[in-house]
Length: 405
Image 1 (spheres, rainbow, N blue to C red):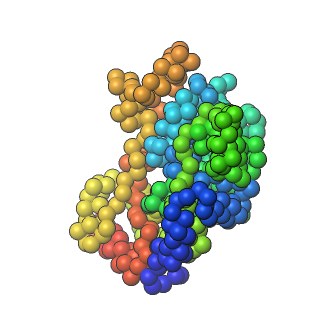
Image 2 (cartoon, rainbow, N blue to C red; image 1 turned 180 degrees about the vertical axis):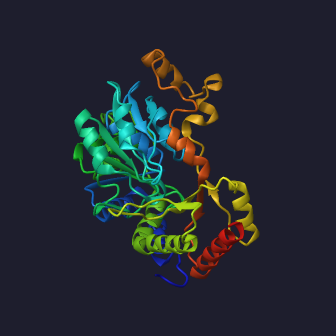
Image 3 (spheres, rainbow, N blue to C red; image 1 turned 90 degrees about the horizontal axis):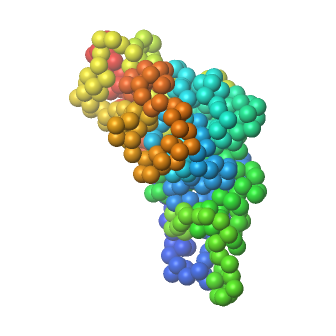
């Protein structure tokens, strides 16, 4: 196990930021740091192309566009994740359709996916929740069988593995987030990865206002372009999603010690797992033997009928614990999805016009397994760069279990 203090932000990040600042942000002095970062990220994650974005929701929107998802199409995803996943589907004027999850791994259930496919289904968006991969072989086979596109939401899973393959390299597209809590960060940012050259071009243009002269290998327009009065700029719809050079500089530095950052989280998770020991009423997220969990968070289910979730958290914090995070409310149970207040900012009109009442009903009972486990999940931080702090938190967890047993 790694020991001691890890610097989350080190010398490389500062060096690359200085490179960008030295250009005075003049395009004529551009140091190409964005392109360098994208190339290095693609190599690290075993994909051909990586296109950097402003954040990990914009990435999903771009991937959906490049996948051919259009107004009224259905996209299957999990309700047990951060809401940006389903909101990106709505952003694409598409319809989020929710599959249930597997009880012990918390991941989207391939059997549930197959049951809810309709002629309108266009894509599947599985989420590598808390650092663990879903069963990607089964999902890819379902996609092949039904001619669907798979977009991996790998925001919480950096350098995780599935049957020896890097998570994010298996689907037709993948999306990563560089938000501040993630394994690596640029403060904010994200990437779309793909092995399809034409799709990478579509992603790039969608993220740079639809400019025709940008491509998978070219992230900005040139002076020769914009100083030509006959230049036809916008060849497709697009948004201003391009990652700033300063964020790319930080991200490139982070990438150079990503293994260290991920290993620390995995080591902290091992401490928590050991602290739980053979406790029968705390059940850690199950990691199949063919997966490597990168542990964005360490999670366990509180299955005791005698101990309340809030009671456990209170006892943990009274003993010096840093706090425990709850799992997100299931997406379809959030207020914006309720019939009485259905508010998709105009997107509901697309859904109503396309489906005429045949839409999946967003209410309790839709995904029974997800509804069962969501209120049981305890999520513990793993981003302890001070090893002594991690040891102390694991000991506090052990003490809390002993007090409540």
